[in-house]
Length: 100
Image (tube, rainbow, N blue to C red; front, side, top):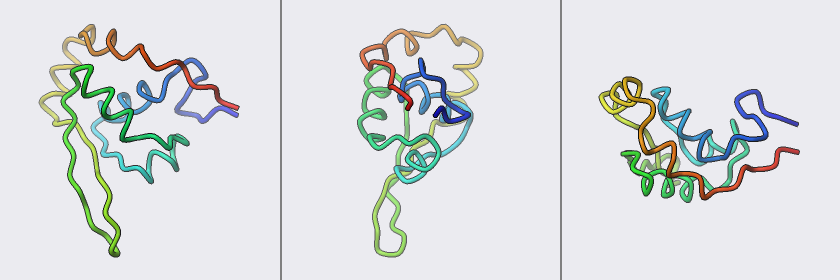
């Protein structure tokens, strides 16, 4: 079954990058609920290594600690003006995930 925001050929990194470039925050719980992604920290690491400047902040809520991730709006604007950046090409090590 395919989630409306995903296609079978889209990788988890692609999904997260699209979410962040839409100006949205994402947390581990949100990534799991919306996209069924359980390895958010690894995908954030991959995207950062590919050159995407992702910010993070540790949040404590109800005694639980988790990270929120986002991209600053000025970075989003510059990416929208030049979408053929090297970020797209360098996050290809992850194989497309199989959606069942």
